[in-house]
Image 1: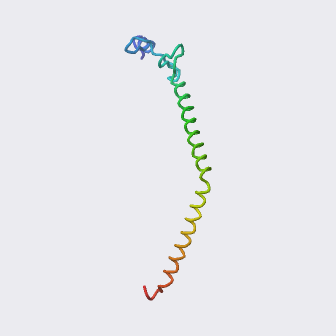
Image 2: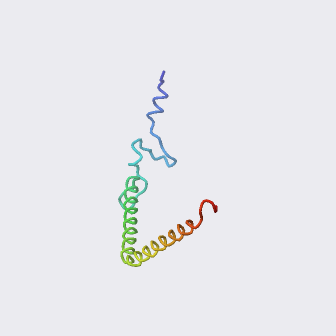
Length: 105
């Protein structure tokens, strides 16, 4: 059975250490601090930090694309050299393995 004391305790507004009333609404709309005449909420912080992260990622991707475009000839030449070395070494390995027969091993 619910007594009146429990109902009063439930309806009583909660306060923090500075005796400010704590709202019972969603946490995303709580006011964190004041900048000028605008209250900053967790929603504002999430949106602004997401935008900043997206801008940083875009700039870093564009930088990588520009560097790889400017160095595309050197990259393709290195890939050609590496392919040639891999083919040469695999041929050498297969040739050296053919020298041994099953009876020699």
